[in-house]
Length: 284
Image 1: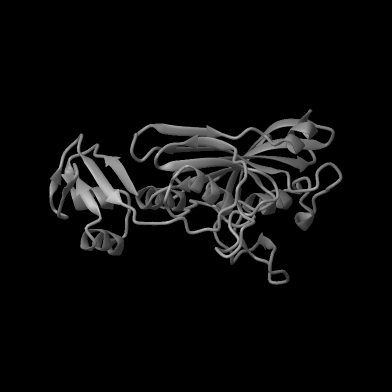
Image 2 (image 1 turned 90 degrees about the horizontal axis):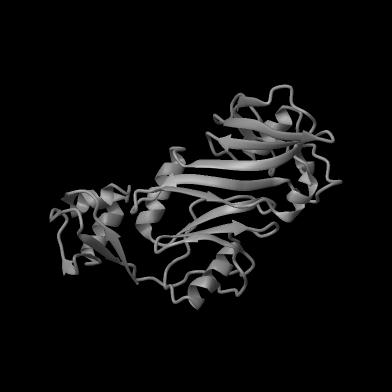
């Protein structure tokens, strides 16, 4: 499948590819296999390109997950991205031999729409967590997103419901997180853990419940859940970290908003996923 990329800055073809943080080995392979064109003509790594030129990469691929038909809540789509509002209770992927994951539904959507590409997700959220998941259709977009997620320059906001009232309505939690040696699935605050920073702001408080927005400065496993439990405000439904499940039977955590600069349109993307029904009912 051919994918076109607009050139927004004069450079060489190789510099264009490097600007999206594509690896040297991948760049070598693309040229070795003659997968790159400039304005529909063959090119070399050091060929000059100018604003308005079109780079084309031949993604000689097939859908690489089992196909499952089903509905997707699509928040945004173009030739490079498919951004989805993930429901509760579905895992992002469960291996390529299974068919019960979000990747399988995306595979079904690709098949239905004639998209012959690998399934590429830029990040993950837990099975219990709802909200935004970014799929990248091509290698350049995925490489770009991986870099800026790793450097924390992509801004992600989560909405959550926790127990109790906060004394401070805004704050920053800067506590390292590591694995709990007593449990394979739990994480904990640990002096030997990795740096973990969470900004929080209380949006509403009622009936000994707080509605909170968190922004991640790092991306550790269970980061929000561990940090909220550290403040003695465990998430509703989060029995692993001391939360109460009387009002909701899953962790009350929603990937609410993501902001980043589109790699090819040079525009700020500002994507929001509305709260799911179970969390919204508690707020009401």
